[in-house]
Length: 114
Image (cartoon, rainbow, N blue to C red; front, top):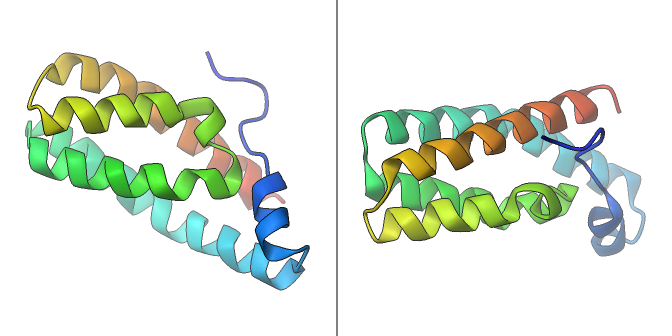
């Protein structure tokens, strides 16, 4: 179950020193790139492509702190990355991915109206 609000822009505000244009640009990048990342990860999981799962989850893990998603799904992405690295437990990866996808969809919705 996800919290009512999954995004938190505190970190983005800190690193941008309140630069509204930078914040808007980073949000725009997130909104444009995230759907493709989710699709890539979902396809890799469906093909049990552990190398691709590892690569995509690693990339996603490094981008989520900008909008505070690391607080919500950081552990799930870390677990997906580790399991994929060890080529293990595709069912557990799938379970974690369900939460990751839902969180990204909610974040996308929250940031689209911001």
